[in-house]
Length: 265
Image (cartoon, rainbow, N blue to C red; front, side, top):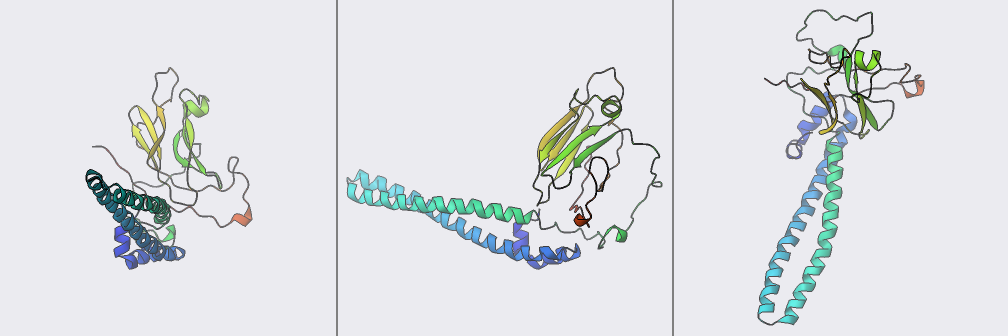
């Protein structure tokens, strides 16, 4: 997600970046989030001033009580009470504005790296390096890991381990081979998996969701994931799991904002 300070100071850079991604429908979001940010900072400043004033008056009340000026102290207490009511309103407004800003910021795309070529679709990609030639096997891939599968308009995703052990032998609950996690269908969501020697750890939006461990078993193929893997990002239309294609839903698209791979050294 773009830093709000960067967006505030460089709105035209952010808009140009949106144009480079051919997502012009998102251009109004930049001005909208700037307005919300200004309102949020104004609200926060008023709330901070009220808190500072409350602390100041509280000290004054103590001094008045020490001098026996009870009536003046009660007036100050009434002033604090009035400020407290306004402070509650401001804190609720702060929370509401923060949620709105975050929701919009999740939709505004990150800044493209200067090395990335600009293109409308994958037909305009520039190949940097190729290792060997792409091969489509004439048999079903015996194992793979679904970092994320989403079915139609679901508000959940599936994260699943498929292997000879789970698929061919049908052992899906020793250990449990998958799970679901809630997402926000209208925003970008972040999915990940950590490959460890003894487990696969799945994440959704920064939270650890599901762990598939290596276990002691006499059955073969329980944990075939300790070798190099391919990363595939694709969409499927039709099929036994997805169901028939409704032509009124076409065209469909999957938008990927970024992909990262980390390796321990």
